[in-house]
Length: 333
Image 1 (cartoon, helix red, strand yellow):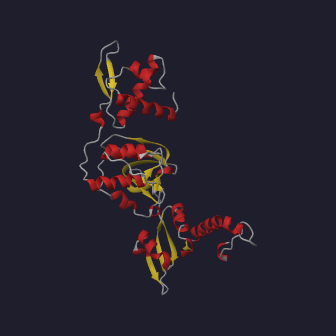
Image 2: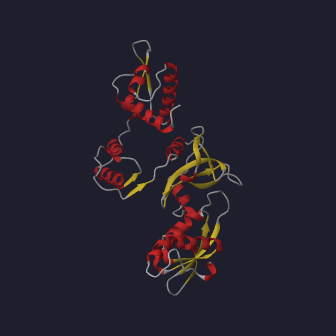
Image 3: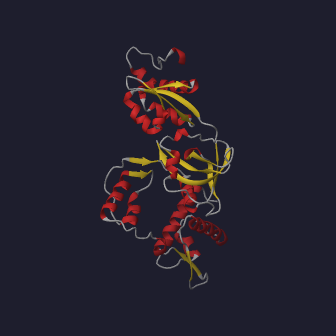
């Protein structure tokens, strides 16, 4: 059996061959035109049927037509059936879409073909402002949302069955938001970091549930993905002091309800839920010395240790400083 990368390359070549041909291709012609297929007729048939099923599962209409000759059956993809409908964009909307696709790109993806298909416009020759990471699980998850098919996967060592509502990109990571049917205490909305899914997601029956209202996934995740526990357990609370330099930015993330005390110097003490400690530590490190974690003690120690590791290369380069030596508060040693 072909390896996964080799099979993906073969399926891609099959797609191009069937889309570009001007007439239906017989199975024998496909075996010759597309690299990677076995020569033995039975094995060729089995491999092709599997690839054809994959293309159809991805929404690609592979057409079967009668042809002359011994095989009597040919295959192709009709461009009119595969093409996107006219979007009806006005010139300003086409320009805005072109700029957005040029500025924000998915890792490893070239926007030129997609943009031409969507708008007929060329991609502006601009360096991307952001390149979003591409993960193998994103394709199946997007398909689950499109089909409204419950998706099954393992996460933190537990089996999940999720009605996928949406994919959201927050602070350097992709999150799947949806209703976990197997959550403790009954079905509940949960978020899952896509790069932490264990194994390949498996899709269930199409049309199995209804999608919530538009943008519900983003609102459910909020702009603080670490506020919701990833393992379905209870979220803990954190208390931190934020000085005036970063207070507005932090409140934009956690909300004004988190403020428990405001100080005369413009700083404030905040309290809010944290479910994903790794994500929260990364968030705090980005704020530098403008934030101090007060409690819980365990999370405070994690932040101090992360700061120590981050400061080690700098301290090692300072004249008269011992490499790797960091001064921390007495209570955190």
